[in-house]
Image (cartoon, rainbow, N blue to C red; front, side, top):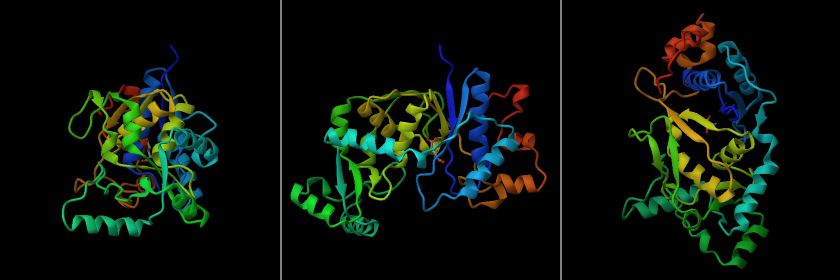
Length: 300
Ligand code: GLU
């Protein structure tokens, strides 16, 4: 049996906090204890928010925590050609269409719909795509593309689900309502998700699925906030014919008021805590992980 492969995949759009420390340490400990491999991936597709100093800080903070990873590190911004290829594969199956509405137009359409009845929301609380771009006549679509308008490439969710049949993943952790074991995916709850944009040839959902496959990741261990995103990931894996890892969604580290930590909350930033004299062992204790040399259980 090849060794299991774990990964930690932060976005360099801010400094790491205790929540990241927990996720990274949990992945690292699980890899070490199972004789597996641990990879680090930099999810930097959003050029407007990602910055080199945040990426440098990720390496520094993880090394300080005592985490080591295989080289080279995969940086998503270096693999746009691979993501484009996947979009083309899905396009070739007739599952992708361009939509041309701006974010403001979409918000206005949702407001109009909501004047009469609640408009459906995805598991993250964002309204589903309300537009009709899927049924634009081909000539109209070509005309808008030729005009050079910005666009988003969307997955035709109904057609994609019809092709995929039933999707189930193995959950070693727990979902928001205690879901565990064999979990049924519900990608339709996300509507026609964006796969790529004119200026960014990929999206979180698409690149995470491609990268986990390219890197041979067998065990995806990440925060519970991404639990229902797994539905979309399973669908894309099925459509693209790539392997499905097992998943372990872990508890989120919260602040004193019970809120999920944010990258801008200084009180829980790793750099701040380090600056105040905290040690890596104290960080482990703060996130509820025993020192790995004393064999922690992780406590997902
Ligand atoms: N880059 C994502 C984040 O920072 C994590 C993606 C994943 O683990 O699937 O939240």
